[in-house]
Length: 246
Image (cartoon, rainbow, N blue to C red; front, side, top):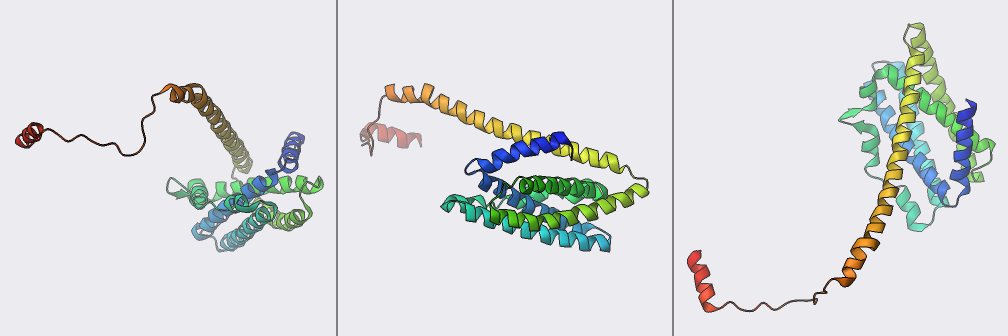
């Protein structure tokens, strides 16, 4: 792990775990990410032509599904009432994470780039969870679960790295594929950050618009009487003219 990346993870981890309410949000994000990864790897297990990799993908998917449940349980244990329940319910997330434009991640990348994606994602998870445990940021129960999950993540890194080494021996540009995957992850994080900033800025502007423009206008606008309003009956000649026009 580079010192710059470790420094960033350390600072972000202190924010995520020390501020009240943030650990639930972080664990919720982990639960969703593991569910999405489960879907991606299950599709890979179905699509790969290699029987040996099919088994590894399937075991990987089982791990990810179990991790998602563990993180969801920790959200409930640390959460508060309905907010905790809402944090682990997202019916559209699986489709969003697993399929884009009608294609799965495996279909979009191909097996070689998919393995590079798995290696980078799982290696990042190992580094991140390692920082959490080294700094003692998580509560004891969550830390215990993280240690168990970390063992699974090490297996995921191991088998994907072994496949990358096999591809390297076949003359494939493994270093470039891994580098592209890392750059892609950085770009996606930047997009998520800008989306979150945009949502917050939009909320501020809409609030200002309401209080500065719509609120005063509502105060000076003529208030209409509520309830049903009687409609005066039409004059007989007007009714006759309307029927004649029909």
